[in-house]
Image 1 (cartoon, rainbow, N blue to C red):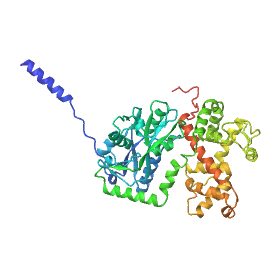
Image 2 (image 1 turned 30 degrees about the horizontal axis):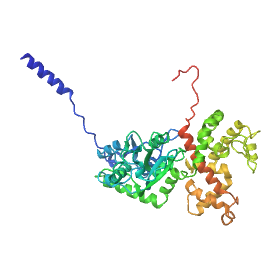
Image 3 (image 1 turned 120 degrees about the horizontal axis):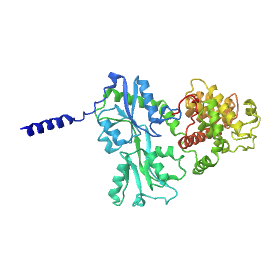
Image 4 (image 1 turned 90 degrees about the vertical axis):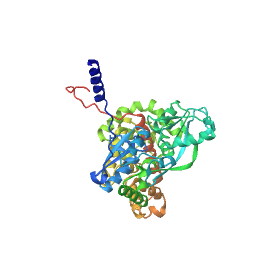
Length: 463
């Protein structure tokens, strides 16, 4: 009897310890809470932390703009992989997902998509240090990887029906950018990503290129649960209709992808090489420039690379000189006594850019403010103002770099510059100047650490 009681007691204890996990609670309707909960994925085309520590990204900006117009607060849930994201969406743990999701037949059965906002093509990317694959048959026996849950999985499944020897791995640890990094290091032979992902990444890897494209184009869209809130869905539809009609979507796309295809592979290889053998000599000067101006040292370094490839003795036929290629007038204005002194040149160039940024009208927001200031750095404030005036005359926005970059090249034409205060200008050069710097900056942000000045005093404990 005692043994029976003891057994019963132990079974009772075991049963008390066993607790079934509670199913996740669905998110409350946004109409009740005012808080929009959105699933996303960390990556350069979706949502990431900017150099100044603030969230940014194409999807982040889209969602934030929608929420602001609808009067909602936003809470982002950042998932490590697409499988987890789709699972939480099916469990109604968010109102929708904004993560660069390709609308496919398989996903259409599991969720509902909003209006498409970006057209992409799947691309097979290879390492140029190996033989270029011509088609999927050349990938038999190769180390091929795709992002788990992506449209590339469906493509590979379809191709394997025709090519039985085709094999691949599905990566659940990250996104396409991580696969591209592994491909660059020789750990893979090919990866399949969307064209927008490689547009951003191509300037970061000199040894990667497109082998071939999967023919059919795909559309990116926000994903909703099947039984989406009709009122929220209608708001999203109206939002995309508006931003497509008034040019907002085009300007936002330009902000993230407008500079993506400027550089040749030799340009990328050049800055990657000079980051190792040249940049270290001038790092203290670039760090000092950031301390003095608050401008990310990597942006200042990007200007220096565009101007002179970090050559302190560079001289142009027009007389601009030094690492930051300053004119005599600008050097005098900034108190430079020797334009060939790299320290003076870097500090003065940074201070001059800071002046130009501060001089921009208050209504011009970042990052457009900085891109326009860079155009003024190249061609002068007067010509930039002419381009902004011309943009307004042509029913474009003088506050948007995406629109002003369209009018800058027109300043070289007499039919336009004759009607403007400052006359002729090689405005097309300013556009190339800015877009190249944007790309060099992206490269430096990827490979170089932000500057963190040592602010602790001797009496303060170390961390």
